[in-house]
Length: 85
Image (cartoon, rainbow, N blue to C red; front, side, top):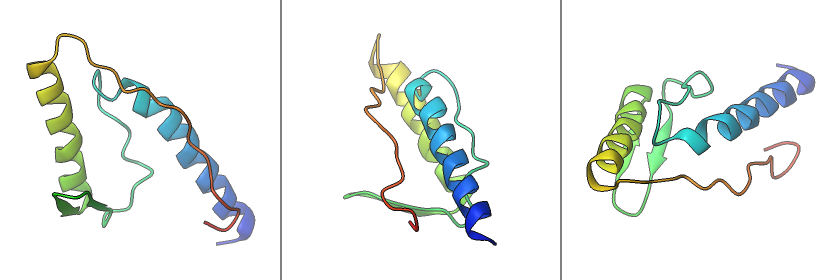
């Protein structure tokens, strides 16, 4: 993959996240930017694989709608930290 192709993929991922995350609790996100072996880790859980990643977001939406009458995902920014990352 050339540097230009890589940069275009990064920009597409950033644009997708900017579009998806504000409506996280209203509708499903796009999973096209994630590889099949995507890895998620927080202080309590660890998941590997796109199916498990999808389940995480479904669970967030389900519990958000179950426990809150109004819930928002307030996105402050998404950016590439360095040209090669």
